[in-house]
Image 1 (spheres, rainbow, N blue to C red):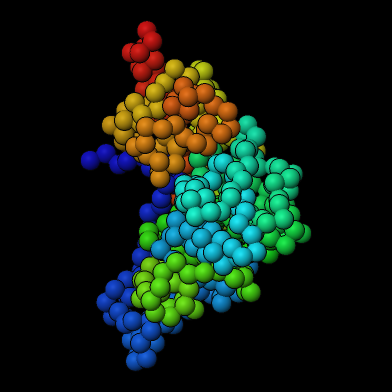
Image 2: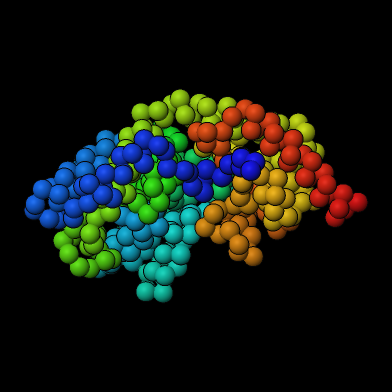
Amino acid sequence: MKKTIYLDHAATTPVSRSVLEAMLPYFSDCAGNASAVYGAGREARKAVEKARKQAADAIGAEPREILFTSGGSESDNLALKGTAFALKDRGRHLITSAIEHPAVLNTCRWLEKQGFDVTYIQPDSKGMISPDKVRDAVRNDTILISVMAANNEIGTIEPVADIGAIAHEKGILFHTDAVQAVGSIPVNVNEWNADLLSISAHKFYGPKGTGVLFIRRGTRIDNLIHGGEQERGLRAGTENVAGIAGLGRAIEEATAHLEENAKKNAYLRDRLLHGILDHIPDVKLNGPEAGRLPNNCSICFDRIDGEALLLRLDLAGIAASSGSACTAGSQEISHVLRAVGLTEKEARGSLRLTTGADNTEEEIDESIRILSEIVEDLRLMYHG
């Protein structure tokens, strides 16, 4: 069977061998409940607290500011809903961007139904959120600003440090969804002025179903899940010890090798992008040329249907995406591509390719060759 060329690392990454090895003992030999007082429980607790420190060290936080969750979506929900309800007596206005992940946007829409007011900041044509626009949107009753660190579809790295500074200047809490950022660019909660920050392990070679919400010490937040007193009473439920241990190892490795991994990904990304631009006519890059995630290549192909392109690539053994993995299968065009000004045809003809640790130059060159042939064939088939 031909090996798949995997170019969808923004959607998810495989668990690395070292991460799997760190997880395995907690499925069998050390399978105790981390809340138990006997030996197996203490071993499990030790693993959880080790991972808490690993996650904290990776983002410049304190271990007690790390809350383990099931992933980015839960972290976003907890950050927004938890803050909104904890501070509702002080104000009911939130600010976010129009190009956030659905975990943020759909949470904001739900909060609007609960009597909160949300302002959605529009990006420029490259997906950049202007700090000045955020400042202009602040009201006396604003309690939270939430802007993602880097866009999951077009890779734009946002000026979150400046936006966080505005929030603090106004006495407002600042949350950033850093799911795409961790493992790709340096992340520091203090430099970013973040009070809340979301992380998901499966974006940096950790296990699915495990994440983090950083909650700055002293920040008030209501819990979503009620039950036991796990995670300081903010997130009830028996800890996923194996997953947490895997997250700890993954984030430690991602941080330790951040510069070399980013350099490799950027090289492969640029080789892919320039190869596409050189070999396929009538294409353009979505998002900025500079100031984007090192592994992100979002391309718009004129006179091409993205779904047909994806299917043909799949048949040829190349895994890619037409946008966010969380909207795959939807008949609606990407809200991100729409917000940055693409027409419906342009948005439907867009493809997201994201490189990763195991990709090679040979795979990139083979992908360019196959993509060129498929695009030419589809254009001939539908346009003559």
